Length: 292
Ligand code: SIN
Ligand code: FE
Image (cartoon, rainbow, N blue to C red; front, side, top):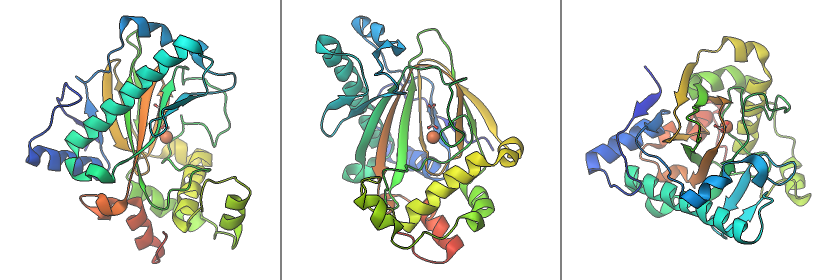
């Protein structure tokens, strides 16, 4: 069965009937990508100029925005440019939140904003280490931002002006991947989580869950045999479309594409419609202990 489920929503703020919202939430939680081919993030005429890598700060790969503090980072823009770029990304953040609240009304005030990012660089052929290489299949886990089991839900919009798709691969189900790599995750060194936090390497304490997730991310990316042989679905998200996915559960890789907006949200496991789908719960079954 394809992990891509198409919805015909064409507006950011159109509520679904309760049964349709419950079905969309179930599909999302169960590890599918919800694809909205009719939902585009429209740029105003004067915003078209931001479709260029020139607005990135030197060495940065994304412009980032924090909707909680309304701060823009990793950009070379200043003055009026900076304000307009910031307003464009802020508008995306608010549309993305509205969208999730319509599709998954049940998440309500439990849904917390993470960062917004604008990715103006072509993904194909970008030089990075294997661990940072998002063209390799992985689940998301953040080395410096432990999340103690919170779910990572992301909304993506391809805003490419030349009609170029964002090319993804979706890998095997989380349970299958975790079953292969869990035994290879080394025990967390006692005191290491405390030290990482103390040294400012992590923002907050790395839980057993964070340790396992980071290892699953790294082990899968570093395993060339796995990357070559694991089954996958190839999918091209056309320009001017939107999709959302729990990227801590769904194995994904971005092979090509330029100009993307992305909004990250965090959701407590307890706020899910069915928490058995949470990586935290699946991993607790595998390891037979509490992880967060
Ligand atoms: C990723 O989350 O791995 C990358 C997604 C993208 O840039 O399309
Ligand atoms: Fe990722």
